[in-house]
Image 1 (cartoon, rainbow, N blue to C red):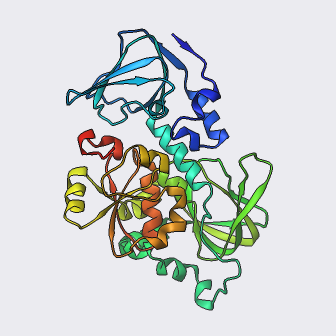
Image 2: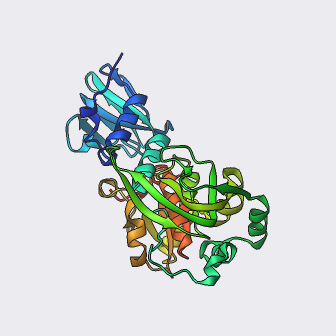
Image 3: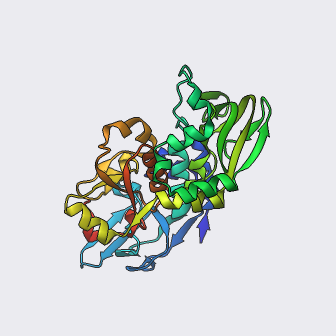
Length: 355
């Protein structure tokens, strides 16, 4: 049996509570409340289902792999969080009475969180009053001087320039639309762009940044495989160089984003060679995290990056990977030595986690 889910039932769940109204409504479109009779199993230990499950009504008995048992009651503070969230499942969940639950696709959840946390970003941190010298007018020179391009093999950079397509642009022309799917990475060759974003109620447009020759944009949607978090509009006539998502992933993303399995990453952290960096929201971090980790939510990463030690290696994790990839690329642009935890926090055995 199933029924419709009301917004009031999910708006206080963690981390759904951090999403905008629009993205909470987007989740509502994809779910229904399922009713499970008493005695039936919601999921079993060692199962991999890639679902974020919340208990809305009734009581669940959780039987953990280590023999521990616990009762989870709907409406409790603990029930605001996903039920036994690690993958593979570290517990079996059995209905003690008729229960109502929802299940949300993990990838959808992470993409929406990524979208929300990057939507407030200035796409490229440009001071509108900054003086641009003659060298900066050479877009190729400016690109090659950036920290992230210093980490990319020269052959890849050569291929990037060969595969890029030049696109003329007129004043007022929209290059990317907020909310649209990302298809290209752009570098402004000539002219000037403004980055604007709609307010959550859709009634206002906020000007976030001005981009000039040599500035790149559009990478965040490609990295996280989510929609554009802002609109970029031409202010003056110019031209852009654009690189397809396939070429961006092959030439720029993959060489920069180092991935590391948990066993190797844990060994490195324990030996003092790296620090865990958790880019999930504060309430997700407080619910469970890795011992010794530092929490800098993705939406604050640009603001707090200067408080991190650029000489230190960080291993980034979120729940499944979308936010980690975005965070890793952003920090790589600033010269940080970064790795991503393969599979994310949900793939780690619960015995290794610090609740």
